[in-house]
Length: 304
Length: 251
Image 1 (cartoon, one colour):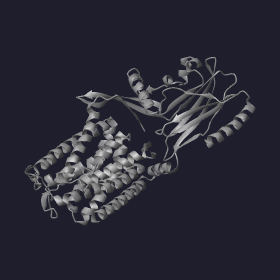
Image 2 (cartoon, helix red, strand yellow):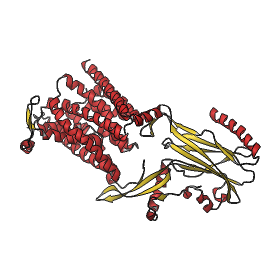
Image 3 (cartoon, helix red, strand yellow):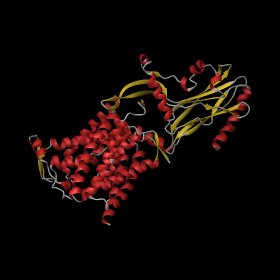
Image 4 (tube, helix red, strand yellow):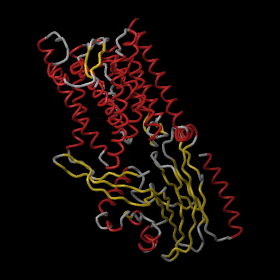
């Protein structure tokens, strides 16, 4: 069945969008990450202009991060103070990102830049995760105690504006969480992803936050950033399609339920290995677009 | 189908009336002068009817979509990566074009006559914004046509005008599901001895209707309210799915 997207003004197969939503929901419940890294490139691949893919994805991220943050909140695993300082950076990053997006669209490089950034991000994180999970699986090694690495401790020690975060037991410069937030905000408005898979390790190794607070705090931060981004994109660019967002959210609701059953069977290092392979597969697919000689050298764009 | 039959009936009455004024006249009409793009829109058929002039020996109909400025970009290899490098702007390009002829296109009229009226795919005038770029724009222009043939916005060959008995003719045009909204123009040309002797124009409106139109207008006119309603929906689905997840986990 075809469904017409009123804002993006194109017609797509309903089953395809629902299916994509299901995959995204499944991934987020099994692996605990947003799944935006699959949704955004796939939407662009389906022929939805990048601006609409990124704008609409923000809405879907609001829904999925709220659903995720609730559980952490009820267990008290959200450090609102750290999250709010990060927000100062991420809201700025979101506005900056919308500007960068416009500029790249103007120069005609937006699809290429999105592609390169995805290849770099997914490639780096995918291979790191593959390496780590393979090592754990092979040696049956116990998880090492995670904490702030010595390098980052030294690198951020001299920065000004030190603030104490009692909930996380930190006394660090506010510049560091603000910078992390800034990068997260850029990811939301340029790439259409929440950035959880970048923020979570960064908050552990760079900020030195306790592991049990990291997921909830990053989701809290992502929730507000994506809500802000959705409003910004809908009001200033009109690039948020409510029908597309609804279909994605509906699909993801179904995928989430399937994922809960599946996650009983996929655990720990195995699940990280699977996720790593998936990240690398998307990475190679996008790298192919970038490096393999295309069939069609020209592309056409109608100016509004 | 029923709609079409009714339209055909109305048209027959109509052409009867037209005949009364000009018994041998050339006339056209559309089965429907609106195409409504609704939520389950999957393309449409535009039916053009008309009566042929008794003295004419050929017919051609063109259907042209809303004009816009179009940018064509070319990918080039830069350090192993395929990046967008060169680009050319074209002005007033119809976002949809199709045409139909009665009989053999080549016998209708000399190609110069067809070209003047943009009848036929090679006749479509696509000019770069900057006239100095005319020569280098040719591969870009060919790429534009190739790309839009693939998406169904430009035809691969001509449609046929069929005679329905007597002087009544009919031509069907297929609009794809990714059709742009806007005003389209249907032009019909009557030929005699390789020359155009008469022509008729009709406008066709393609617009969003029903729920689709409601959403589009609301999003444009009340973008803040639109954004907040959407956020509310997102928050509700998020709450609901969070609730489901915790129920499952505690069960």
